[in-house]
Amino acid sequence: MALGEFDLIRSFFDRPGLRSHFSDVVGIGDDCAIISLPNDQQLAQSLDTLVEGVHFPEDCDPHLLGCRALAVNLSDLAAMGATPHSFTLGLTLPESNSVWLQSFSDGLTELATTHQIGLIGGDTTRGPLTISIQVQGTLPKGKALRRNGAKAGDLIYVSGYLGEAAGALPAVLRGEKPENASTSEEQYLLQRYYRPSPRVSLGQWLLENGASAALDISDGLLGDLGHILKASQVGAELNISSVPVSSELESLLGVEKARELALTGGDDYELCFTWPEQKKLQLPDSLLADNHVTCVGRITPSPGLVDAETGQPLSPQAYQHF
Ligand code: ADP
Ligand code: MG
Image (cartoon, rainbow, N blue to C red; front, side, top):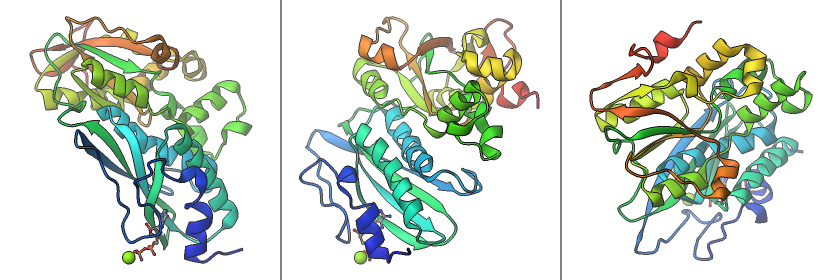
């Protein structure tokens, strides 16, 4: 059954599980949403757009799409150390399909509930399926995990295991869903693609405890670490053999291809951060349990990214074999 625009918004987006838990927020229903911030806080904002056929395959499971669309935006807040506050949703739909909308809204609600972030407004239009989400988060005034704070001597860390979303891509493009994957490895990788884990608590802890720089890895470690190096005007030595690769990725693709994807594959949404060498990184147990964190290299004064073992320059292109 096709719903009108306002019924659609009321049924699927102005629902209890998506409402803000901040009592002073003006959410869906007015011309603008309103949020207020305590005097000692500032607002962090980020927008990501996912287009069908470009950022996700046609006929993608709407529940997984709802999870993924919000997760990639939450990952940007995590990278700055921000606390999720609220989000708006620009939704372009080819048709008003209640079954699709219910499932998409359930996926959004699942992640919004986990991260306590409310949907406070948006826009709904007809056209090729496109999902734009803008997230807002809060940061203590004057503080943020920026890309430009890395100093020579700092250690470089990453969260999670890398290359998994890129490893899932062939199966994603074939239209496979996690629940009917042919092997348990493939199922695991598909889950990692569709349900990235935004490292929100880790980002907040890193901000509070003095990480020097951070970003989220969306385009591959080599390229994204390059953004930190450029912004901070430093270089780095990377220990390629310590870049974390899961046994699932290795057994599916072999050691060499798995490592290539871990260095250059996109869509992982893990954090890469730098940590001052004079301080020991001591994550609390609560974070250690959920965030596998690995030291992968060190910042150097001279610019350029090199292999720590051979001294050879590393670039995303040079490392791509295919
Ligand atoms: P306007 O006429 O001011 O552009 P709309 O009629 O587009 O407002 O939307 C009505 C209300 O519903 C607004 O509060 C808007 O923020 C909200 N809204 C519209 N689309 C969405 C959506 N996809 N998700 C969440 N809120 C939405
Ligand atoms: Mg209006």
